[in-house]
Image 1 (cartoon, rainbow, N blue to C red):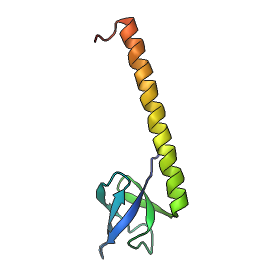
Image 2 (cartoon, one colour; image 1 turned 60 degrees about the vertical axis):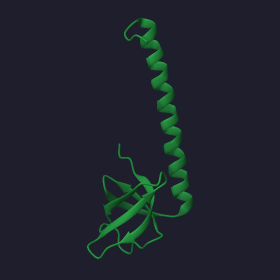
Image 3 (cartoon, helix red, strand yellow; image 1 turned 90 degrees about the vertical axis):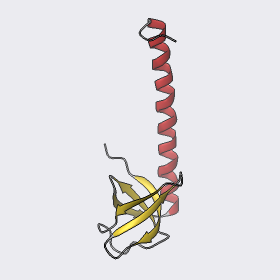
Image 4 (cartoon, helix red, strand yellow; image 1 turned 60 degrees about the horizontal axis):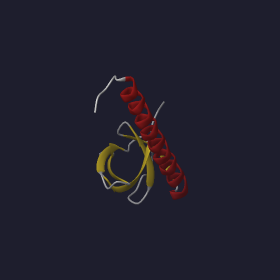
Length: 93
């Protein structure tokens, strides 16, 4: 499975590197040479440090919502698993 995260392009350099800001405020330099015409203000999907798609705000919002839902589900399952291990005595505390 591949996980692509939406972000906003804040700068594009002539060497094909773009600075992308993600929803948590983190700004990362990524390879934007894979998609032509990337400009500051564009919303893109980044996977493994590479821009893999340019998307509109609506699509980015759907992806972000899906990722947040996935994270909440995983956190809930991790809590359930930890509770089970405590009941079984596999972990203490």
